[in-house]
Length: 321
Ligand SMILES: NCc1[nH]cc(CCC(=O)O)c1CC(=O)O
Image (tube, rainbow, N blue to C red; front, side, top):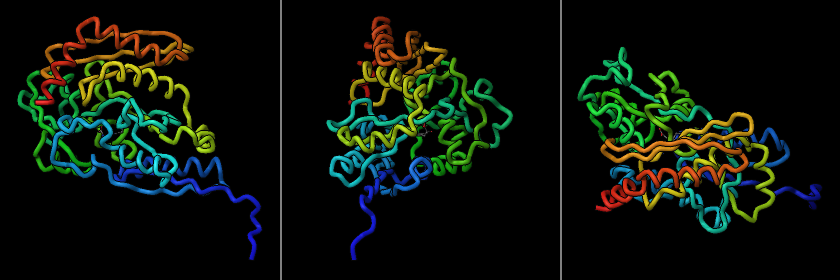
């Protein structure tokens, strides 16, 4: 029997991590694409990444930037999947040869959230008592909170969101710092006790947005992905990623950002802090949103002139020890 379909369109295979957050995000992308292209088929293929498997080592000590992305990238390069959905914050600023950031989706609230144990439910970040044990695995959150609240104690935490919340509720920690966006996407917004203001903690580069990575040569996929692109978010994230790319060395470092677009103007604020929180260098730059990457590079150089490079060099040496 011969097929009556004259030119069947290719099935698009979406690569995803298996974590609950990754799957929620990937299924959202699949659903949006399906709405835009009802006659096409989009399949989800899941893979475990190194970051999902190594759970007993502090993230900052692993020092491999592609921790949550490498297996998915190999999948694309080996033609097993056509694109991969990432939390943009987990996607390294330099991608492997042959792959590109094909699409940035509309960002959710990029702020960090304070989540507290029951016994602190009448407290805010500023009123937590001395010795409160705060769980975080992010050097950025650690350094900024130490800077503002040196009386708090910090303890590393790993595992997925549910594991972390269970450890909090079991009393292993008094409070956690998590991304607002992750809690919202998992339907756990009620656990957000306080959105941390940006004068206390600048968020991570790309936080709250999804980044879709695909093969640079795959014109068809790049065209399909345009349906999900959110230009203001993309411009903000390009500025943030250029800032980070210009500053970072080989590992996770305490770098935070904030971006705003008003009219045609993009304003980028960035900070670099020492791990003990004692030194914190922060500055701002503004310019045309169409020049996002140049603004990121400009701000990185501004901070380097103010001593950021010395802080980063100390941190790279510290982490390698
Ligand atoms: N690597 C952890 C990670 N990657 C993305 C998110 C949340 C969603 C986002 O920031 O887009 C989280 C959890 C967290 O930081 O609390």
